[in-house]
Length: 92
Image (cartoon, rainbow, N blue to C red; front, side, top):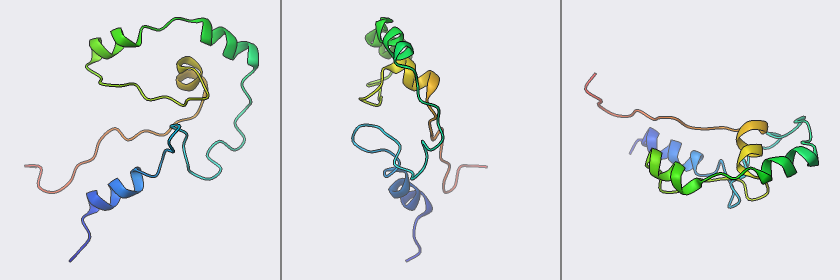
């Protein structure tokens, strides 16, 4: 049997993040400037209503790195995201 490309992709994608939602690609964070502690402290003081965000956008959960706050992670750190996968007959 020929491997299914989406199945193979899903296996690969499932390995991109660890249990703390950190990217597992070797050297991914290499040469990234250290974020100053005062910036992290200020970001943590910002109150974000995650329940409202989840309700407004229909999210069930918001994933984030457990070491960093949401603003630091989304605004100051590199990331990798998959925004879509097409496979098989799509009617096109």
